[in-house]
Amino acid sequence: MTLIEWLREQLDADERVRWEFHHLDCVATAEANANEIPDRRDCDCGYPARVLAEVKAKRAILDLHRQIECVNCEAQGRKPATSCLRCHHGDSDLGERYYDGTCSTVRALAQSHTGRPGWLDEWSGEGTS
Image 1 (cartoon, rainbow, N blue to C red):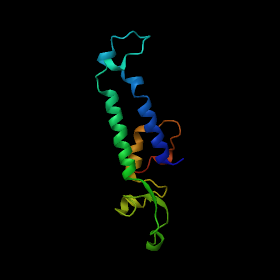
Image 2 (image 1 turned 45 degrees about the vertical axis):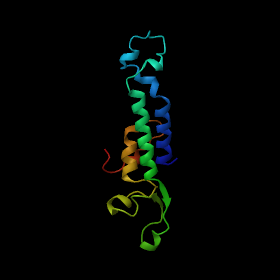
Image 3 (image 1 turned 180 degrees about the vertical axis):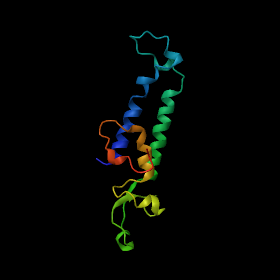
Image 4 (image 1 turned 90 degrees about the vertical axis):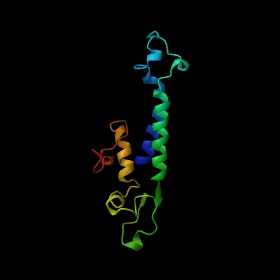
């Protein structure tokens, strides 16, 4: 599994569980019995909506930094690879570092999911710690 595939799975999971944890700090659901599931219609705290907005924004960034098969690398003396559409032939400091289809932007985006099942330490990358 690639970093981008794994990160998309994490975003799907974030979207699915947005209601499971928010009620701990939610004023609208604080009065609910501990054994009850709070009625989502009573909530106006904004947490689930913010999670959805963050997931949407991260998916947009992944789409902007999508993988492509580079057909010009070999002709330009670079290692041929699947790489980031935006960064691969842009700033050489960003584009030539990772030849697994990712870039520094995608690696930085993934850092908030470090430690989840399936995370590989090799995805940490430079400048993201």
